[in-house]
Amino acid sequence: LRDFLLVYNRMTELCFRHCVCNLNYRLLTGREESCLDSCAARLVRANHRLMGAYVGLVPALLQRRAAEHGAPVGPSGPPPSLDPAPG
Image (cartoon, rainbow, N blue to C red; front, side):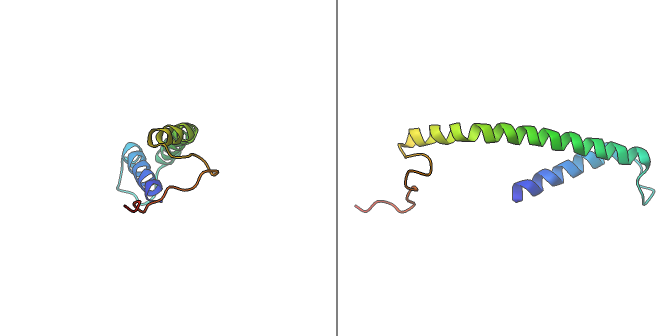
């Protein structure tokens, strides 16, 4: 949730700074509105592409990390213990 809010806030800030030029009026102009729509759409599409690539890479990263630590991977293996081994 924190990461989502950070991305959302950054996107809002970027698009606002890029598109809103005149703060003398309460309402947005048509040009500002259309700029904000296209700016947000571009950033959302870019975020979807990045998340798609990330989701595609996660299994390989988890597999490599598990191989480095010698831990079983996937739901068939037991979950790693957080408690230190006695002795």
